[in-house]
View 1 (cartoon, rainbow, N blue to C red):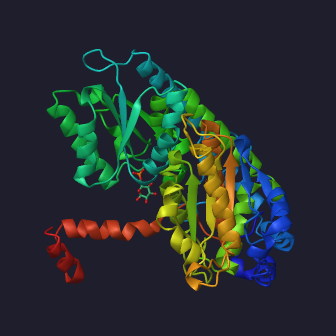
View 2 (view 1 turned 90 degrees about the vertical axis):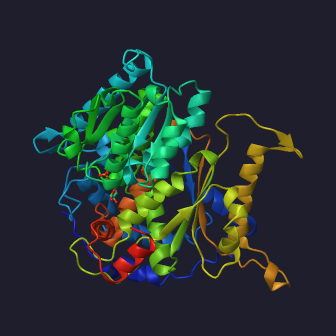
View 3 (view 1 turned 135 degrees about the vertical axis):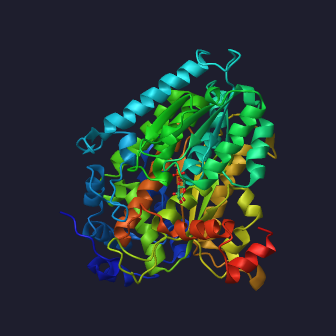
Length: 527
Ligand SMILES: O=P(O)(O)OC[C@H]1O[C@H](O)[C@H](O)[C@@H](O)[C@@H]1O
């Protein structure tokens, strides 16, 4: 049996507080010490990736107490409970089964009389068969012509993860001759979003997937109607151009106009749903089902590694624990995600939802207020672009922001140019190396304006190349990190009540049931 306790009641946490500022990163990372740390402080991840935390503000003492914290919070036991079908999502009284969509790590989970692994796999198989028929020209449009484009209509978890993954692998797929269909995404209720995408595709050769777990999200339903109108106005049949991904109990599941429908369920939260039909449909159509299966394999390997009790061999848990040390002992408020990979351009946006919607909470699992900091603010941009934008504040601003770098030895496309003795890929990698050391060690200068304090912690995830399996491993690493942090903070990381109030007020505004500030702002915007 696991027990759930607030962080500030734990013996290991009291010990950890004593270790505040015990590591001077600049000193630790300078000279031979630094070289030794880079070699030593590295944990293996799935798909050949590595989590290097040499430039984090930790030493063996901190790591030892973090191991105690993992034990005291029963982080691995809680993960095992989650995997075996416990009601971990206490707020909504739901199981949490996204890992099950990519592999069986524990005994079978039977819920509502159904073997859930069986259910998720059967949906993946249905999607694979459908995608293959589309690719083979066996499923065609009204004129018997093949589809060339797929457009996902969804928002939040029904958009961000699948979009980030598509963009991450689009070039890889092109090079490996497995880009079967171009994918586009409509998410915003801003009419310009749907209009711009519709103007950029040939509707006659496009499949639109309406993706909404609940089937009630206003933005998505609005965009569905927007697209249906466009299909009809083009003289085409909706049932030849639209499919749905939803849960079997949602209003969308009853839709008569879809050429096919694929299902997930309430046990897979939106921001964790890329591994389900939510990601599976668009990604299998775009890249082929084999590529989607490779993504799931990388994620499943991460899920397995995340079971390791030894925190030094469990990168997701270690990353989570270091994050707690930074947030609750060092009092850092943000984390920047900085992939040195253009392909990961939308990955920080996905992590924003994953992390901030999961752990942006002020009450514990029992609904009681807690008195310690929880999830950090997440933001990020690919390097080197970020260097020419917000790195100034990261280097010399008054706040310290922990940094999560991601870098790959090889590019995806392989085209390159040598200028001044180095390739672009070498320049990219040189920049991430330089940044880690610049942030950690800083630089003294008699001119304060040019002085770098250093002491700015970072870690880097390193891989050979951003492949489907590596991406799956990355995706699951962060999902599991967020899950472990939720366990340590004693949060329910799987509901999101904080998004409701705005939706309710927006409805009131649209119904003109407003007064006070709501009315004044409504008038300002001519609603
Ligand atoms: O997939 P849907 O049910 O349409 O939900 C889409 C999104 O909207 C909600 O408001 C939540 O904030 C998200 O967690 C969710 O991913």
